[in-house]
Image 1: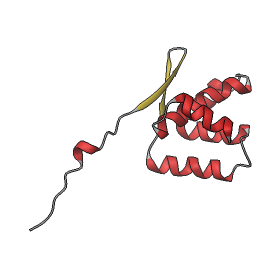
Image 2: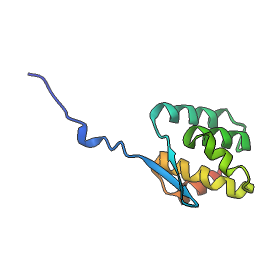
Image 3: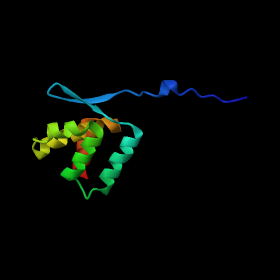
Length: 102
């Protein structure tokens, strides 16, 4: 007799967003995107603007990178932390603390 395990109820597949000034940015948390994101992070020589730009472009889209381009560096980290919190299912504060400690 075959064994059947129905995983339908285990898959959330919920969309995630960050919001800035009333504008929503959908976070792309699909598996292949996350593989690319962590590859970008692993290849980076520490935190740098190019890495953050690349990660934000993958997770939020190029329009988001343009929208946030005028931010001061500390402010530019905010959408980065928020997007990473969404994909890691962690709080914003956990991601920020982890990033600043590394």
